[in-house]
Amino acid sequence: MSVPYDHEFDAASSASSPSSPDEYLTQLLGRALNSFELPDETLHLLDSALAYAGSLHSAHHSAGRHRETYRHTWLLADGSAVTLWELVHNTGRDGREQHEIYVTEDELHLATSRLPLPPEAAPDFDIQVPLVPARLSAVAPERRHFGPSDPDSTVDHARRLLRRAENPDPGTRPGPGTVGLLREACAHQITQAFGRRVNQGFALYEHAFLLRDGSEVSLWEVEHTATPDGRHMCEVYPTQEAARAAIEHRAATRRTSA
Image 1 (cartoon, one colour):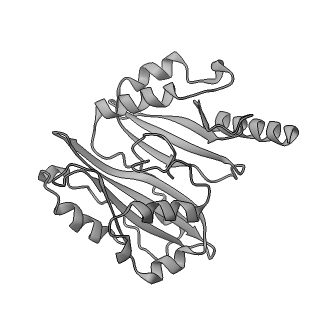
Image 2 (cartoon, helix red, strand yellow; image 1 turned 180 degrees about the vertical axis):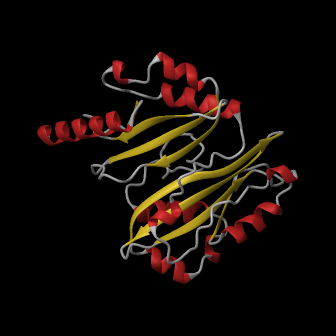
Image 3 (cartoon, one colour; image 1 turned 90 degrees about the horizontal axis):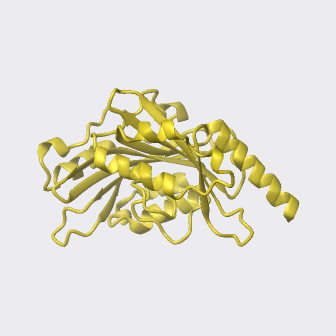
């Protein structure tokens, strides 16, 4: 999932938000320097993708250099899933951000080990996900993986998330208690929510925050263009139920005014 604003999962977003599994793949291939190395068999499998989910897998930031790895998964028509791994870093000579894509964790691990970063920057690959076939449950582990602690980046992400929220009713935004908790966040993860159907033209994202005491807090972001002028906007809610209710209300209003 990539969205048109500057959060960690949207490492190189385009001007428009993708709305289909195929568009997510197109954006990923377009920014990856080594996309030409992907096997034709993998690309052929992705032609039948029905849904897409992506998440930050691990990250390291130090001395102006950074490295993130992302897991991109497509659900296929036969119920299996294909996962691609993206490596994003700025360790080149010019310091520009680069994107690489790999089919297996081993390939990703090898590429990461070649980066000029300290040993502790190496990601901890504790999720075993075969490429094909793989059932959807195999790519949705119960234990959430936040990656290394980065309080400054996480608190800043929470601040930007709340700042861009344009809830029609300000009272539906996360309250002062939640905002206070987020000041103690030390890591975060962003994933696109599927499960119950999301109306076309809407996207729902979970922003999960790890607190210093080991507990978690999630905020739910609704992204859509169901505005009178078609402008892109975001709304943020403290629960998934509230976010989905907002989507249903927006969708109903759009149908009525159409």
